[in-house]
View 1 (cartoon, rainbow, N blue to C red):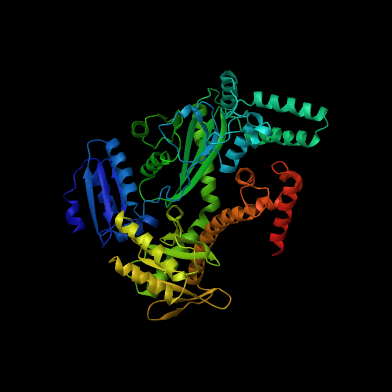
View 2 (spheres, one colour):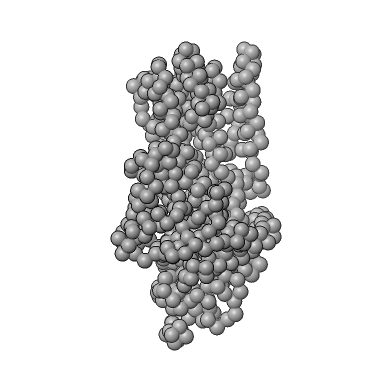
Length: 586
C-alpha cells in the first residue's frame, strides 16, 4: 500500500506524517520536494533511529503547501499537536531563566522562565545559565537597590523597609526621579555594564569597614567577588554590543550534537548543548531544532548559523536577522561552537549509545514478558501521605524506555485520610478523564506501585471510562526492593541482575522520588503553619514575614537566635527556637 501511495506524491513542498500499524503518528517532517524525500525513506538503506522509524512505518499522509515557510510553520504545529515519538527535539528541555524588570510604576525584579513574547523585551535580560545564577543576580541587585519586593502593597512597611532594602513604597511617597535612576542603573548592569554597581559596593565596603562592621563588609566583598568572577564573562572579539546567539553542530551519522553560545554585550553570557538522534538530513534537523528552540527562548537581535542551514527560511519564520557568516570573526565563533559540539558528542557518545541500547532492550523485554503487541508509553503512579495527612500522588511517564519529564504530573488529593484505594481511585480517574477529554496520548501500560488491591481499583476506573489499557503492579520483598511484576492472573519473577530488573527499579525510584519530593513541599508548608501557630506572640503578620524570609521549617531550624530576632522580639524568638529544637528530638 505504501509503495502504491508513493507514486501519487507530487514534487511539491509540504509536510509528511508517518504512521504505525495502529494509525498513530510517529514522525512529522517537511520537505522542499515531498516525492523525493518520501522515496528516500523507502528506497534507501538506513541506520540507527532512522532504521527503527522506517521499520515501524505502515502508512503515511502528506500535506502540500505553497512555500517552505508554510511547511516549517505547519511542521512545528503538527509536532506540537501530535507529539510523535520520533520527534524528540526539546521534549525534555527546560525553558531558560531570564530576569525581568517589571514595567510597573514601582518596578520589581523577577526570575521568569515562561517568556511572554508580547512583553517589553527591553526589560527582559538573559538567558542565564541556570536559575541559581539568575536568583543570585536578583538578590545582588535587591541588596544594592531598594526596589519593591512585595507583589501587593501592604498597609504598613514590611521587614525589607526596616533593613533598608525597600523604600516603603506602600506608605511613603517616593520621588519618581529616584526610582527612574535606580531603573537606569539596573538596566545598565543587566546589559553588562558593571562599573556603577561595583563602585557602589566598594564605597559601602569602605563605609562599613571604617565603622568596624566587618561582617557586613565581608558580605559586600563576597558580592563584589561574585560580579568579578561569575558575571564578568569571557569577552569575544565582536564589540558592537548586539545580542546574538551562535549555533554550531557536529554529527557522526547517527547523532546530531548542537552547541549554542549566547552573546550578550560582547560577552559569552552562557551556552547550551544537546545531542539528539539524527533521523532526517542534518540540515533539516538543525533548521527544525533552531526554529523550535525559540519556542522557549527569547529571540536575540541576530542569530548566526552554519552554512548548511536554510537561513532565509529561518529568517522568515523567526522574523529576526539570521546570517550564515562566510569569513571573519563571526565564522570563527561558528567554528568554536561546532568544535564544542564535537567535543560534547565525543565525550558522551559511548554513554548515550549504551543507555539507548539498555533502554530499548529493557523496554522490549518488558513488552515480551507481558505479551504486549506494543509498548511505547508507560505511565506510573505512586501515593504518599503522613498518617493520612498531606495526601498526594505523582505520575511519571516513560516513552521508549526513557523518562519524559515534561509529562510528569502532581496530584493533591482532595480527601486527607489514610485510604490508599481511595487515593488511587481519585488519581486514576482524574488522569484518564483528562486524557479522554483533551484527547491526550493514551499509555500502552499503567504501572501502580502496589499490589492487586490497587490494580483492581485502577482497572475499575479504567473500565468505567470505557478505556482499554493494560495494568500491572510491582511487588516488593521484605527489604522494600522490587522482586516481581504482578498481573491480574500471575506473578512474574524478575532476575535481580537483569536489564529488566534495573529498568523497573529505575521507574519505581523515579515515581517514588518525584512523589515524595512533592509530598515534602506540601508537608513543609503545612508544618510551617502549624509550628508557628503554636507560638504565642506570632500572629499572621509575623508568620508571613518568617515564611517570606525562611521559606521552610528546615531553613527556620538552621537560623540562630540573633537571626530570628530580626523579625521577632527576643522572648518570642527564644520560645520558637526551643520548639524547633524539640522537633529534631522527636
